[in-house]
Image (cartoon, rainbow, N blue to C red; front, side):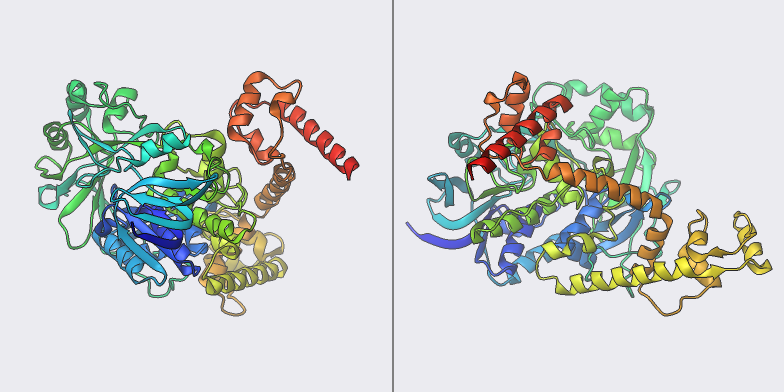
Length: 625
């Protein structure tokens, strides 16, 4: 039987697999990406968009590390918006509508042209292991492919089952087969395998939509790219509008009367669905007092008539879906091109992983994406590049890269799923990050570029941006503003109190109704600085006090976080720890005291006992030396 040797084997060609495979190849490692359908590399199975609240920050982090997602959406996006502009910078989140088909083709082209990257269509049936270490995979054809590290990114394809009303068919996505063998292999290797559920919305024909009276959503007048390598000047990709409509009581009544035909409510679906992106059936049942729900009409591209009905995820039969649509304003004559459906799939609970996304049972085997119980293209891509960076360190015999919660949303996500586990598909939110003022989209390059690869230009741009911003902040803190009639008339016109005493430029900019651009109209810059540096300077000035408080919190966090827990610590021998706490600690095997503090059920008293035990053991070891 033929055997092929590689450095890195990536299983799955979705958003996680792409980042892993491209990253490995770009770092000079012979990498193979194995997927069920080569033509579907990078396919957007759900909504045609990249980014959003917390997700946009995550895409910029992927880009800062050397990933492809941000570059691809900049090339193929058709509407760009910055969400939460009216709020503080901690929750400003970039989002872009994609040309779904162009995004997929572009990602496939990038993979095809990447040096050191080999593509293989096939199904992986077995993870090959010897003495607790991975050494390759075996396909259903019997072909064995060997490698030094394996990254599994199977998405929703592990034992995937699609539900169209009361009809169920095997598949990982509509029109695609499922991976039917690998789940059993994982069970034989000793892994716990569980089941989750997600779903998607119908696609409808544009001609069946009456846009009169619907709320139009245009792109930003000053759109911002995702990638730090995409020039801002001349970037204007906005080509389409999106539209908002709403469900109503008639819609909800149709749904309530059809629950007996819902696989979700008839017991056919056993997997747990996403709490934060629920089906319309769940919304109607769980929020009976809510009389309407938002529906976003999102064009799937500039050369297609398909429109994605975001907010109407469902597994109800197609005739019920059509009745629902016809009850909604603007959709009275809607034509379904592709019905919505639910998909159940196996996942490997991520408490079986280390913080570097390597499995605890098998060395050199890494997991990324929905196999870890997460949802979303962005969450998958972030895990894909993170797993890759650690797979490379594993091959090179180096210490793992652990990106902390205080450093990136990637760190928040990985720590959350590995430490706390997953009971439903995990989705990132800004509220999950304790230090979200620090984890902004605009400074992802400053925070993370030094961890990445192939991004010397990004690192240099980040250094210049930080230097320019710091110098401008220093200048504005020293710039004295003397009150005069012109300034006070302007302040009065924007609802700000007049200046009665000399002030500094930074104090004036801290006023809520004054932007740095407004300030420059009266007090021009001494020398040109980049738009990014200008924005960073404004954020540093306006939120100076908040930054100081958060930095103190980060330092306190790092002190506890960096107390390591020996990997061979015998929790059963620790007196005073409750049995339940011992069990949870043995399951997760936290690497440090900070991680232990975030395990559900672990109390502050448990942490005190654990800390004393670690200090005692360290003293004993020191005495022996």
